[in-house]
Image (cartoon, rainbow, N blue to C red; front, side):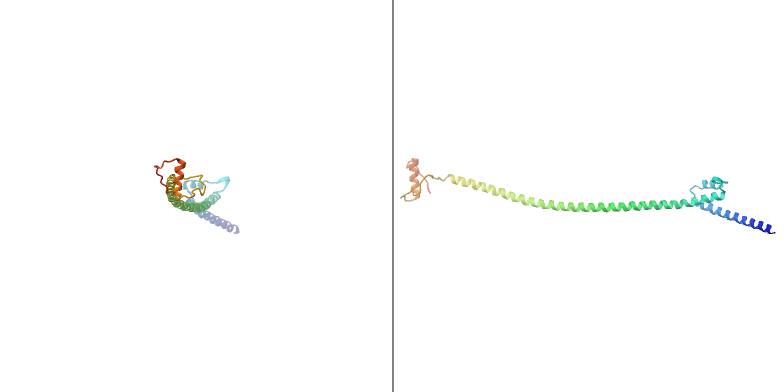
Length: 196
């Protein structure tokens, strides 16, 4: 009897294992159908009686299920890597943008400074132009004065070589000069001299 009980227990365990395997197979099939991109290929793989290197169907199914469940994990890891790279790229772009903004700000400051200097220079040039016009007018007036002075000197006569006190008893300097000129230049008495 103990042999029959042992056999019935083995049969019960075998039946339980078969039902568990069927349940697991159903679960795996459901999971695989959700994960698989091409259900027809997956079905062909599940139908094969034996897997690689003599594995049983159950082992093959478990390996495939593990691979399929690892795919989303791998995809998630890949997405995290891509996301990390995108964040790094964005951070670098922000840093570059900050540098560019700083350069633009400095350039604008330099342009403002240059515009200020140009405005000051234009103002100074305007003052210099006005001063130059005034100087030109003064130069014209000085030239006129020099000309007038020269013309007025041409009417004057300077006498060199007359010793001091030579006028002697003359009534005035004017009479002495008139007498001197008439004697030395041999001017006739009819020639009128205007001496002031």
